Amino acid sequence: MTRRYLLRTFGCQMNEHDSERIAGMLETDGFLPAEAAEEAEVVVLNTCAVRENADNRLYGALGHLKPLKETRPRMRIVVAGCLAQKDRGLIQRRAPWVDVVVGTHALPGLLELLHAAERDGPQMDVREYTEVFPSALPARRAADWHAWVSVSVGCDNRCTFCIVPLVRGPQLSRPMADIVAEVEALARRDVVEVTLLGQNVNTYGRDLTVPGSSPRPLFAQLLRAVDRVDGIRRIRFTSPHPHDFTDDVIDAMAEAEAVCEHIHFPLQSGSDRVLRAMRRSYRSGRYLEWLERIRTAIPGMAVTTDIIVGFPGETENDFADTLRVVEAAAFDAAFTFQYSPRPGTAAATLPNQVPKEIVQDRFERTRSWSGGPRRCWWRAREGSETWPRAPGPTSSCTCRAISLRGRSPTSACRPRIPITSRQRSLRSRGP
Ligand code: SF4
Image 1 (cartoon, rainbow, N blue to C red):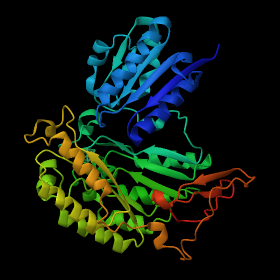
Image 2 (image 1 turned 90 degrees about the vertical axis):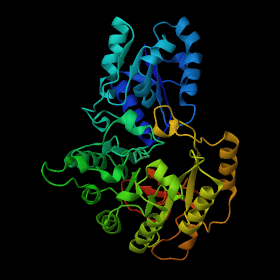
Image 3 (image 1 turned 180 degrees about the horizontal axis):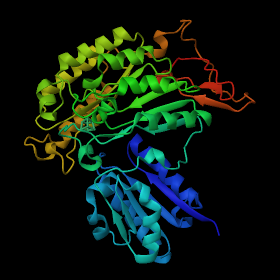
Image 4 (image 1 turned 90 degrees about the horizontal axis):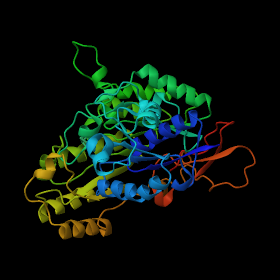
């Protein structure tokens, strides 16, 4: 009889990457995907602790699964991801029908945990240290032309609003040779685009520095090494920290053909006072200087950002500073988030939490604000020979055609580019 699994993913690209590995491991064990929990023998909830109300969403989903589990006792329920790492034993205390809790570092042991749960009852592994990078596990990728490639896990920063260091631990970089070998293997399987993943991706390698020498990131070298892999046409990366776009990284981005002309440059706030309280290492002036330097080195670079409104103690003046920096930076796109306290973070205990209605009001004003001269990456390049307009999605292509996203993510003007993986000819570099 066919055994099936259902996998639900919450959260960021790191979780999407881990979910590809969860699916890969289950399929290696003979499982096939299910459409609904009713037909699944294994249900996995890959959770996120960053988003608001993450725990309510998890326990809501577990509540829905409870009656199903009562009628189908052989069904196994797995909670994975950041919330599993953070809440640990609490999950099985609140929802004793959960069979397996598997933390962010313990993913490679998922099948063993499932088999042990079948034999011996509920299992939990929330170890503190990554021994095997999830990238080394079998994967069931969502697209055959694109792959997530994990280059590091964890983060050494301590931004006061962020739960990541708590649930993913300090930064641990993967050896460069392993990463390049994985990308080479992907290219041999017709993958043409990779996204390098790390919580603070551009400090990659700082923990690999030879003992005795000063710690130094190796991200620029990594970009160049991946760029040399034959067949890889597009390299993206996420999530970076503005502070770590050092000159060598900018030079590598400018010179490496396959690196897309897009950076995500998280501002978070335009108020220096708030940036200090967030424990971000830059101030608004430095931020704008860095941005200028990058745009000078790489003309046409698309820039996106993250903004948090309503951080504890944020005043109307602080908020106005954010709008001023947004205007000066002329982002291509901004992802705005309403601050809400995450238990376990330093900011959750700060005084002067901003009332919900004020946070909501600033959020709406940021989103509807039209004072910023938003750049349109594609339109700015219309008519340029270097960036020819690509035809729209193709339905007429009879070869094994795939559609690539543009090289920058400006959604309002993003054509999809037909490309044949066999020919490997990139017809356009536009967004
Ligand atoms: S750098 Fe990013 S991942 Fe690290 S603590 Fe700050 S926000 Fe979190």
